[in-house]
Length: 154
Image 1 (cartoon, rainbow, N blue to C red):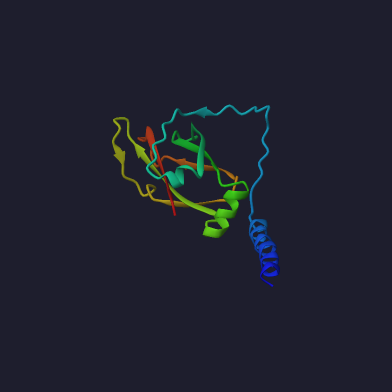
Image 2: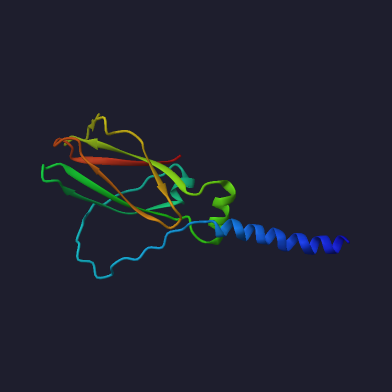
């Protein structure tokens, strides 16, 4: 009787774990390899004190341009690293699917001083496993010359 109980439990447990993973939504991305757009990329340095958040998102690039009104406009391309069988299984077990982060853009003037604006607030973002997102921000005034972008896990 004991052997038969183990023989039934193991496949049932395995089927339950696979059902959890089957519920995982992930995003597959296709991009043009012959790109015609030429963004102006910003050299960046990434400093992280939160290895949990750092290991789950990758900053693919930061580009900038100017609006017609002469304001700086940023675009940050990020990707969720939470994909693959074990990562998806762990996300489902921990209830961390989809992945929720917040970001904040702080603007600096020409002398490197922070400009306090109403736009320097934490904004929520939701990432599905494997998803690539573009976060955009426009400087609140023409005095903004530089920026900091901060991310945190919700």
